[in-house]
Image (cartoon, rainbow, N blue to C red; front, top):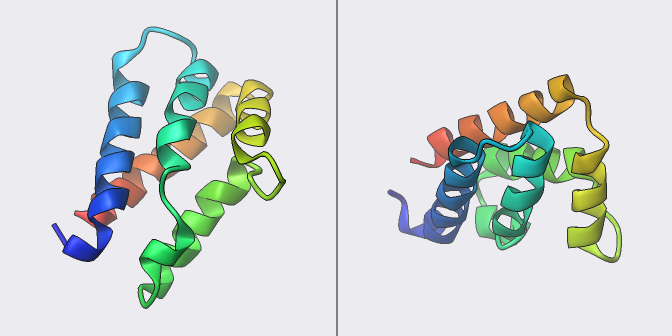
Length: 100
């Protein structure tokens, strides 16, 4: 694991565990995983342009471009369709895989 991305790897691993280990709806699992994802900052990917863009895409899908990131992300996830939530969960898993 690249030491530069250690925090991101740890947080995304925790988020994936939440996504995988809950019997709740995919939206609820995303809501529960969101605080872990928000522990990662875009600055952690300085110099890794592809990762930076992909992380920004995840944040965009969570709609965290507002003042209260956690609240905006939770509200967005709660209103996603199953398809949208599954697509976002897949992006999170793919992103973690690329961090490894």
